Length: 313
Ligand SMILES: [Zn+2]
Image (cartoon, rainbow, N blue to C red):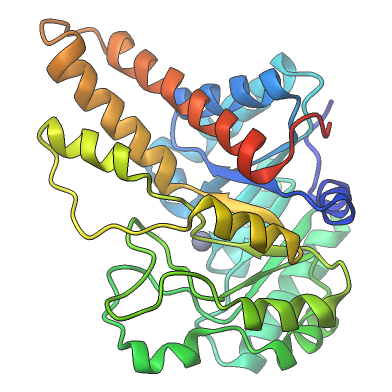
């Protein structure tokens, strides 16, 4: 199969009440772990590349790896998606490189400017059969100093969503309903969980339009313990539980972005391998191969027990 855009993939997920996992790719082992899990469970997948990943690995390396995955896994529907594109130029460059879907993140801009930027990208992308994700409402990053009292200004305004989609002609919308990026999803004094009241209003007003949830890692305590047991120093963590994610999927979320959980499992397994399994080894294939197996396991778990995308190819 060629690379797909996300149109049919998300439409099917929305109508059958499951979500497609969107996993961030930074190197070969991460991609291989994800693909082995999708192949084992016959799951469609969205492979995301951020601007940071492009800088780290070089876009051509990543695109070439993903095009190789298309050849190897002929039966698995794959989309190549730009995560958090910040400018029209960045989206255009990725489309020229072969991305089949882009996110234009104008969420930091005033509403009308977000609309104008997102619409410009959608107009350009649609001519090339590329799908577009827009974002309304701001997702907090853990590095930001946020006063919980002011959280309301970060949430997506349910009354604006329909207007945003209508004016921009996007194919999916990322919403801000309480989670943030990173390994600490909830700020001090913030109730852990999502604002399901807001999500429900958005879902009702959109009638099966694809809703995207960013920052959807579960940040498993056992993985954090393992990292810290083997010399890590990761503190103040909180994630979205599987129960919360399943409820969000039942409320119309059909693309779930997961990055931190893969970073954490990779870090934990490399620390474990170097400290405990084979301290005398100095072959990167040993620890990277071990991390790749663990990435496969966590992605397979999510497909089967959280996303519900098993056997949906
Ligand atoms: Zn994000």
